[in-house]
Length: 326
Image (tube, rainbow, N blue to C red):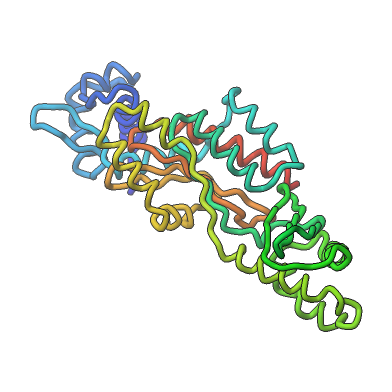
C-alpha cells in the first residue's frame, strides 16, 4: 500500500510517540512534533485516512489514535531499511565473537545474554544450520563409561559433544586424523553427504577405526536435525515490566518452543520484524555462513518496544559475524 511522504511522516511520529510515552496521537500533537506547514484540520484528515487504511485506530470516539499491528509493521519495515549500529555498549559482543577458542554453544549463549542486556528484552538464538559450518579439525577422546568426547573445530568456534560409544585411544586418534585430513575446509553438510563414498574407497585403510567414524557421523546427523534454542532475559522482563498483561503474552511465547521455532524459521536474509496481532513483536536477524543461514536471533517484546535500538544491537552482531566469515 503506497503512502504519501506526509502520511509516512505522520505515521512515524504516531508510532514513535506511542513507543516513548504511550500517549495516543492527536492532530495537535502531530503539529507540535513535526515541521509540516499544514493546518490542524489537514492533519486531522490525514489521521482519519491512516485510520481508514488500517495503520491507526481510535480507542475512544473523542480520543487520540494509537498504532495498529499494521502500523507498527509499516514503521518497522521502513526503519530497518537503513539501520545503523552505533551502540558503544555493544563492544562486548564484538570481543565475544572474536574469541575463536570458545565453544559455539557458549558463544551463542553469550550473544543472547548480551543482546538481552543491551535491549532490555528477552533474546532467543536458534541454531538451525550447522551443515553450513566450515570444518577445521576433529579431536575424539575416549572417556569412562563407554563414552567419547568429540571436539570439532569450525569457523565459528568449536562444537563439543559426548557420544555413547567406546573406543581405544589409538582408534580415536586415527579417526580424528582421518576426518581432519579429508574434510578440513569443507562444510559439515559436505561431510555428511559424502562420508559414505569416502569410506567405501578406503575400506582397507580405515577398517580398524571405521566403527568410531560411523558413531561420529550418526551423532552429527542427529545434531544436524535439531533446532537448538537458547533464551536469555525472561526473568529480567518479569521483574522490570510494569504491564502484566503484555509480560504474560511474551512469557507465553517464550514457553512455546514450537511457535518460537516457527517464527525464527521465517527469518529473512536481513534484519526484519514480526509484529504480532496479539501484542507481541519479534525483531530478528540471521547469522549467515557463506550466504547460508546458520542461526537466527530474535528479540521478543511488546508491540511498542524500541525497534531502533534493538535493530542496532542486532546489526552489531550481524556485521561482526560477517567480518569473521570473510
